[in-house]
Length: 579
Ligand SMILES: Cc1cc2nc3c(=O)[nH]c(=O)nc-3n(C[C@H](O)[C@H](O)[C@H](O)COP(=O)(O)OP(=O)(O)OC[C@H]3O[C@@H](n4cnc5c(N)ncnc54)[C@H](O)[C@@H]3O)c2cc1C
Image (cartoon, rainbow, N blue to C red; front, side):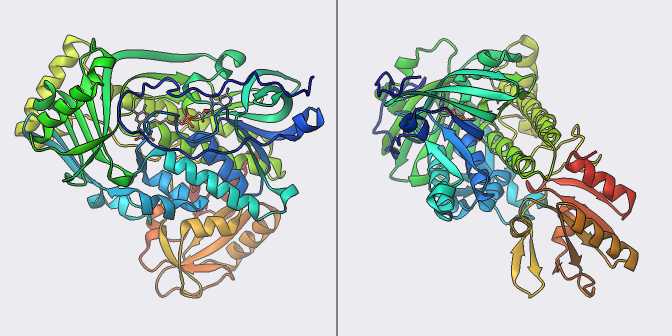
């Protein structure tokens, strides 16, 4: 292999598939190219984990590994976050993602920059036909994090890059866990005998490196699908949209407003959301045969804004561009050494904010499992549960978003009839409102097909508050961080001496930390205990009476039970793929 510097590397072009048409755009940070050891020394590097793609998914995984001190290399073909020259794609981040970001140490930055919202209103013509306030839904109130924050996707990606640098700085230069390699495009791949070889192209020449695990987080245009010969279901519709990111002088209310039939958009749909920097994202549904260039022209956009907000509308156009979408889902998420996550695993329409949010959960799911396997605490089989769990999530999300897409752009006479009936009923009857589907907002997916989760478990445990033994305030994420890579056994209610002995034995022999959860008036029997004065932990873990709950590092419930002998041991073994 030649180590002579060559400059065949073509910089990532502005647009990257998106059309930047009008507006002042966004300024993204730029990260330097650093010559990697493989180029400097002319060797083929060997790494346990190589993440390809530094979008929101790849960076979340990288941060999750760095937080655990697990070494990995991240390769990204660009030198920045977001999509060069394009607007932010993602804007809406769910409670589950915010909880993950709190654990990773970037939640405060997101909350400071983003816009919290909980009220959504849907209109057909001038009638409100559906509304929700997520704050009024009890399950959202259990968590420390709000139901949703709106923020441009590239800000989150930038915070993840910053956080990885902070985590690296906690180690000596040689021991820094996460090596970020910008302007490093993967151009070739093969795998043999459990080892993958990647060819990487950079501005300073090409090199090869080997990896035990390759994570494909390269998004919708991934080259790995062809390299690995994956199979998938894929469908592209004819629905067309045009984004207008604008900054108003007089701002509308901070609510999510959607129109199924907007009188100011020729009775087609419109979305209206506030993001960071007081920028409003307004999505206009276009006619299927609309000319993308024409609908994105500034005079056309201003005319649409005038029709929507009146003649007095006064705003700057930050970004305008058209988009279409497809729906796609792989049949498997692992091929030998390669794991697919984020948009390489599935692609969904943007309705319901399920794309990026599920990529974040893919990353959180795999991060602790890779750490457990590489540290010898669990066998490689544990990684199999990534596919069981996240494939189910991908399929569920594709199903839900496809339903919304069909409601918004009915393709058959039957679908058009259903939509007309739903709108007409919703205008008159409360029950009709349930049929209105302008997007079912993303939630933490439940795992019912995973062998690692007991029947009835597999749900996400929210980041609830409690009191540590000294009376100070804590939350579930603090507990998970304290436990490191171990699973947490929460022990509810007074226990017999036999049960306590059993727990001590288990924690001494397995990657498990046990904590007794005390309700008001209960006495501590274990050294490690905390107080749950409002019973929030109990509710979040679905634990009644004397019971235990096994919580994983990704804050998913692996199992609950009351039997301290066989059931607990069995469930613990299944959660770590030991049996
Ligand atoms: C209009 C619109 C609105 C959306 N709104 C939301 C929303 O509100 N909430 C939400 O959660 N999601 C939303 N989404 C979806 C979300 O943007 C995507 O799901 C998300 O970007 C996927 O992230 P990713 O990291 O998997 O892939 P990407 O963000 O595409 O990242 C891929 C990365 O891989 C790199 N790369 C590519 N090829 C190579 C290579 N060969 N070698 C090295 N690096 C490579 C790229 O440079 C890039 O950094 C929206 C999407 C659209 C289009």
